Structures are given as structure tokens and as C-alpha cells.
Length: 181
Length: 343
Image (cartoon, rainbow over all chains, first blue to last red; front, side, top):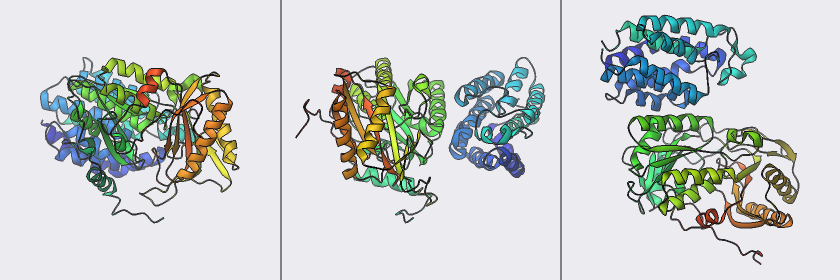
């Protein structure tokens, strides 16, 4: 599928999920994750080919806009140019861990992304989504070490990480719509 | 609080319009209206290493006021108190980088670091030669053994100016990075806040402080620092600040210090010159020669009241470059003061 169709479908999904993501974020952060994601994806869907992830970063803003933008940048490259998805997402994971100073177990998007990248190495996208879902669900019991959630009482233990939820959403939609094939 | 803006949506772009039409040294870039570049004195980027920085708006004149010959090649302006996004910084990098390469200066605050470094990663993917240089100097943000965790504060202006002059003279990218790190390692800053700035977005004060208290080490957005002290004659405050600065990074008796006394926006030149007077006297009392001071309001947070003192122990080359001529809208001329002071 084309990057345009993927980003449009992702925008529609973010619209459906906005309130749920905001509510999840309200338990751990400032409660705007769904809204900022939708704002970024609305611009990305309408942007020119090759400029979608960058449009997302600009419109979404902040550190999370940049970190999610790095994932979307690799997906865009994959859909536009057939770039290797496994290598791209591995690169995005390494960059996010480096820039955000975050590692698996810190209760963040990396807890969904990291197992997905591992599963994608030699495996199918469907397996990566399953791994992301398991990583996402495991964030419930984790204590946050980075971002605003670290200041919440108990480090947010008992709450699912909204970044892990939306990251899984991004990969699941890619699997559902068939990747670059 | 009354403010003179048209609207929250347009205030940053309105300001940049005013800036580029008021100052002949600068103009907007071609890739994005939030990128300010040199109008006069621009050099061939295949021959000269270019220097740029991104920062949130609301702290003027830093950093767009420092774009000009002998200083910065570009400034990327974010929203009010918000770091520019990675793609916007990337536009700035694209705008000015040639074969000689560029250096993206990053004042260490979390959003600036993440977005700035992400921009250099994306640039590298596109084959653009840009290196990030992290700048930090605020001694209240972390102890000496964790210097690399400190915030960027007004002492970063030493790096802007010294690298700007060296780049203009043709220094290559690797040597500029080493020089920037050397200046950073010799720079310390401590701030004292007396009253909050008013956010142009909300119209509300950004923190509160009792009338008789001064907050030592507060960051430019009201971030926590060392703690509170009671008000009194400013000589005592300056003595306390210098004691902390020189304990953190001692300068031996007989040594020299270049000094920045920076006002935060709501502190008058009358007050800043008084702070400089006390700084000058206290340094001399300690056997340290104060040199080439820069006194004024350069890194501001709206009408925030307060002052920071930055010290650089320069080598001869750094001192020469610090005093070199430049042509930017807002950086002052820096003069060596005679060894015995001026009377």
C-alpha cells in the first residue's frame, strides 16, 4: 500500500482512539497523547510524499513528536521506497533509546517497540505485532523511570503506558494493511 | 498582565517579521520562515564551517540576535518556550550547510537535546555533514562530577562567540568542536532569580517567590536550583555567587576570568552594572583579574527579574576570539579592560 493510504488510515484510527489514549495518558502524564498524535497524523496524511514523518514531527511537537516521528519515518521509507522494515525499525529503536535515554523495562514505547524489532528479525510482521502487544501489556506492572510518569505516585504501576499502546497500534495497522507489498 | 501582542497564534512569526525588517544583518531563510540567516556577511558554506542553534522563542535577543558575520550563521526559532521540532532544525541545517560542514549548537535542555540530535541523525541520513555540540554550564543543575548533566545557561554565549570568530577565520569543523568543548570545560554559570516572567501564552507568572527571597540557581523557565536566600545589599549576593562558582571550578590567584553578567529581562541596567561592580571587586579581592565583561540582558525570559554570573577562564586564543569584531544585531562589542581597571 502507499504511504498516503497508510497515513490516512492511521489518522482515522487515531481519531477513533483519541479519547482512549488521552484518558490513558491522563493517568500518567498530561493527558494529551491521543490529541497530539491525531494532530501530527492529520498533517502527515495531507503532506507531500516523502515529507509525511517530518510533517508529523512539526505538528505533533515536543519530544514525543520526535520519537514517534522516527518510527513513522522508517515506515514511510519502507512504504515509499521498499526500504527494509526490520532494519529501519531497529534503527528507530536504537535512536529512541539513545535520544530518550530509555531502555526496555522503563515503561515507555520502547517496551512495545523492542520486542517487535526482535521478532521482526527473521520473522513476519504479524509475529512482531504479537510481540509488541505482549510488551505493551507488560508495561502495566512496570515503574516509570523517564518522562512525566516517573513523578506519578508509584511510578504509574498498575497503569498501561499510552506510548506502548499507540506504538502497537501503529505496527498493527501496518500488518493489517499488508506493509509494502 | 498586559502584553503587546496580536495573538498567541502569530506572536512568534510577528516578532520575526519585526526582527528581519529592523535589522539589515539578517533575513529569513528560503526553506522555512522560522529560520533566520545572515543577510550580509554570508560566506560560501563549502569553505566556511557554519554554526547554528535552535531555541524556543521568548528569550530574545538570544539567539536570533546573534546571527551575523563573526557569530552565528543561522537560528531556528521554535514556539514560545518550546524547542523547535527536529524537522524544523533539519531545515535550518540544510539551509546553511555546505562541504565545510556545520555545527549545531545545543543548549542542554531535554527538548532541545532530543530534537537537535534527532535532526543531526536525519541530516546524516541525507549525507549532510553536521555535528551536534552540547553546551552546559549551570553549576546548580548537577555537581562537578556530573558536569555533563548540567543545563545550558548564559555562559553558553562564550561558546557562540568564540566559535563564531574562529569559524570566520577558517578553522575546520573538528578543531571547532575541540575548541567548543574546551571553552565549555572552562565555563561556569550561576543565576539568582528575584521575580517571575509572565508567560505570553497564558498571561500567568511562571513561578512565585516571596517578596524578601531570592532563588539561587533557578533555570530560565523557573526550574529548581540551589535554594532560597534572603534579600539584602547585592554585594553579599554576588559574594555568595562567586564563592559557589569558584568552589565549583577554582581559578588560581593570579588567574583571569572573562565575565558575563546577564539580566533575565526584568532587571535594569542600573542593577546589572551594580552587580558587575561587585563582581569586579570580589574577583580582584581574590587575586583574579576580570577581563572583557559583557553586561546586559541577552538571555531573557520575558520580564523575569534576576541575574546570572558566568565565568570563563580563557587561554590567550579564547580571549582574542571573545573580543574579535562581529556584526550581529544584538551582541555587544567586547573590550579588554586594562589590567588595573578603569577609573
